[in-house]
Image 1 (cartoon, each protein chain N blue to C red):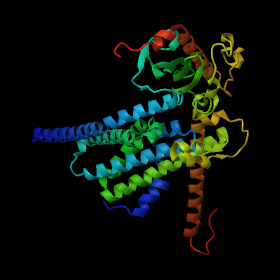
Image 2: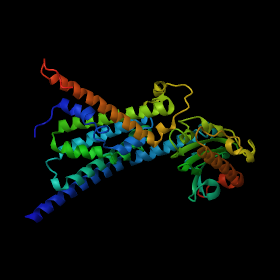
Image 3: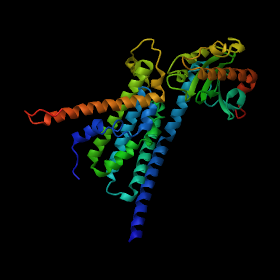
Image 4: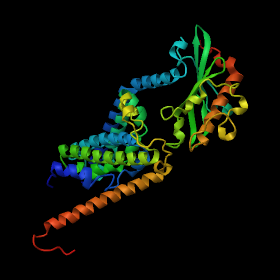
Length: 208
Length: 229
């Protein structure tokens, strides 16, 4: 009699576990393509804020390579580089660089670099900086991130690529120095990487 | 057991037994995301949706589930619902998901939901469980928005900033800058501000309740007899 109870209870629990799993699996199947498309669209929208759609005629998301440089790109994992070309000529590229030394961990960035070595801009993708202080690096919170527009390793001079508190040219944020310091450094390092690897970065992928 | 009236359920959720201020359930998300009113509103609405869906489901299956396994079954139901809501939002309301996405897994940690499943939905009919979910969810949302608004106002001198993230471009007009050139009061935005703010809110509720009780006690005294003050 007791065994009967235990078996019935087990079956009930099993049925619910199966039903829950089935429902989640079904929803996952139904939404998977849509979610992947949404994520591509969101990434493309972000890239297009750094490289205007009319500037290039290739498919940004497909003309991508991954490169690895822990010192300059902030990660021991490969990071993506999206290349923009017009009529086959290189126009600009976007490096998904990482600022490893934010106030609360890594800050994921998109660094847009024109072929002439000027920044088309920098955008923050994900971060965990302090709300109300460091999170002003996010474009939706403040305009600070636009300080990078048009900058290059020559303007300002390489030695001035730091926040004002450290004797450089870039404004820090009210109440937050570590966060902007990390972003300025990551942008500078991305430019340095680009300077040293320009040819290789624009080289067509082997599969083309 | 006699079924409670609809008004009673509404009163319980919004005031008497408010999950945020009286039951003190779901404090983890409550304290973590209330740095401004809009974040509070976002998490509040997502919680309301989950709570209502889980209450209805639990009430529907209440005669099938045996008491010994009810808690694991409720956990399964809630986890499935939260995952399904997250996937569906990611697919069909992607822009809203990008804002609220980080909050949604937090809902699983909200013990208000399993609390209502266990203490209310598993004992009452579907219509009442539905109303209880809506009332408790609304009560929780009110606390989140109030606390978020308080912290935002004191911390950065604005109200409803970033409303455009939730309401689109129209939302920009909703943002109120109450103090121009406000230098900010960091404590309110950092975690201690959440505890202090919640403490003041609870104190406020207690004061109001104490006054009401006093009034009610005075009213019930027979006319002509002075009260023993």
